[in-house]
Image 1 (cartoon, helix red, strand yellow):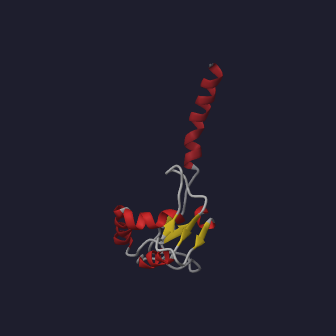
Image 2 (cartoon, one colour):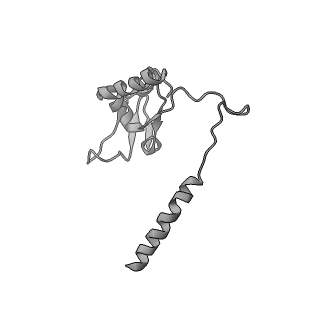
Image 3 (cartoon, one colour):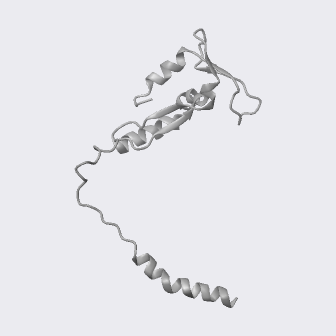
Length: 130
């Protein structure tokens, strides 16, 4: 008990010296060799391949959220569509559905799926970068 009190007192006595030793110099302008302006859309969104059509067509708050970012930053946030299910996907030019899959548990990702031309139509309809 006495040792822990001594350690605490020792740390408490040196803490102000440790904190005071840290300082940062912030220049008033960027260095001449700095990169150009930051991307106007600093936030991006990633959607799993098989969920992309559902989020874009069935969840209205998806576009509301993306539009809120656009209104805040001036540009639509980039969306990355991909993930593990993209690796398992097979293109079917005759399919009328954006994606087709089945799972035994709704929380699972499909082990295989197909996607059709309407997947690309949906992707092309997003006003930002995809």
